[in-house]
Length: 254
Image (cartoon, rainbow, N blue to C red):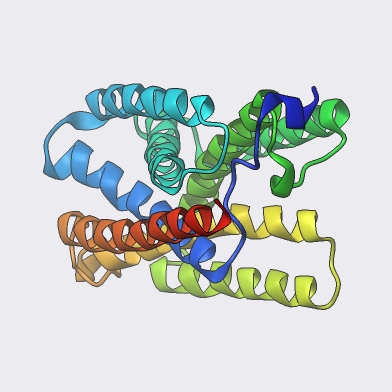
C-alpha cells in the first residue's frame, strides 16, 4: 500500500517519558479497575469481561477509523485492552482453573507467533511505522497479548512463586531499568522497546496489587476504588496535555 496516497500517518505516539508513565499507569488501572468492577462494584468477572470487551470493540472501531495518532482514543483503547487482558487471565485462572504456569506459557507462545507472523508479512516490528490498517491490527493484537501475558507472569511471580507484591515491583522494575541501560548502550531499539513494553505489564500489576491489597496480604490497603480513581485522573491529565500539545503543533504547521 502506498502510505502517502492512503493519507495515513503513524498511529502510535512518540516513545517519551510521558508515554511510559501513561503506559504503566494504564497497566495498573487494568489490574485495579478489573478488580473494582468485578468485586467492589459487584458486576462479577463474567459481566465485567463482556462489558469491557464491548467497550474495547467500540474504542478499536474508532481508533482504526482515524488516519493519525489521536491521544484520547489511543490511550482509551490501551486502558480498555489492559482491563480486558487482565480479565482474560483472571477467567482462565479463577473460572477455568488453568494454572498460571500454563497461561503464562500459552500467552508467551501466542505473542511469539504474533511477532513471527507480523515480521514475516511486514518485515518490520517498529511502532514508528504503524501506517497501514494491517500493521495496526498486528500492533493491537500484540498489545493484547502483552497485557494478558504480563498479568499471568506477574501473578505467577507474586502469588504462585510467593515473591510478594513488593519484591515483584522491585524485580520487574529492575528488569525495566536493565532494558533501559541496554538501549542506552546501543541495544536494538525495536527489541528493547518490546521487552520494556512487556515488562511494564507485570510491573504495573504488581504495583496495583501492592497498593490495593490489604496489609495482612502484604499490600498497602488503599483499595481498588481509590487507586483506580487516582491513577485514572493522572492518565486523563497527561492525555489532555498530549491532546492540547498535538493540537498546537497542528495549528503551527498549518
